[in-house]
Each structure stands twice: as C-alpha cells, then as structure tokens.
Length: 123
Image 1 (cartoon, helix red, strand yellow):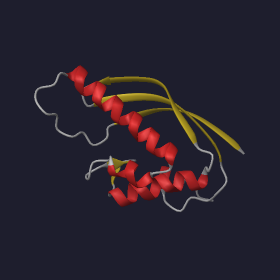
Image 2 (spheres, one colour):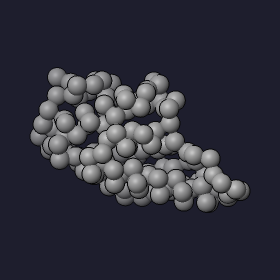
Image 3 (cartoon, helix red, strand yellow):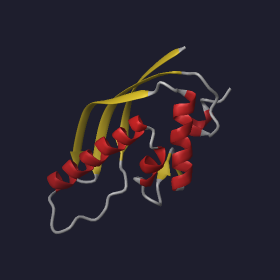
C-alpha cells in the first residue's frame, strides 16, 4: 500500500541560547537552519543525532519523552516505512515558532514497535 500524507507540522526543537542580542528574524532563520539540519540527519539515517536535537524535556504527541524514546520512534518510522521521504513544501519562522508544511510519502512495509501516532501503525 502506498501511503501519501500531507501534514502541517509545528516543530520546536531544542533552542540553544543565542550569543549576544538577537532579533526574532535572526532566531527564526537560525531555527529554520536547525530544521534543515534535522531533515538532513534523517535522510542519512542518523536518528541518534536527530533525537539529540530535541530538548531534554520534549513533549511529543502530548506526552513527555526522553531522547532515547524520540530516537526509538524515529527508527520505528523508518522501519515501518523503509522508503520514507519527507520534504518541506513551505516554511515560516518567527523567533522560536517554526511552522512547516511537509509532503511525506512512504510504503507501509512493517509493524510499528513503538506507540508512535497513538499506536495507529500497529496491527
């Protein structure tokens, strides 16, 4: 089964303190660069480095998650959808707020090991 998704994702990754004063435009540009780096790490399969970009007190799908849980879920997405691809269609940023419209596709080939997406990827 070929799955195509069009999702609006609100992404707020670990935002490190800025050196010196910065404007919201500077912070937005920096956070868009971080998001691009995050996507590149995913395309390389470096899920540990991706997970390390999340804040230690991250909340994912409404619940607190450790960096290890985030890494596990990233690995699970790529195990279930081995040809998973995601690309940004449109982005906007203002300070710490980054909004990304993404196009994601992949072929459902496995069974999720984690409860990602509320367990919807489990049989």
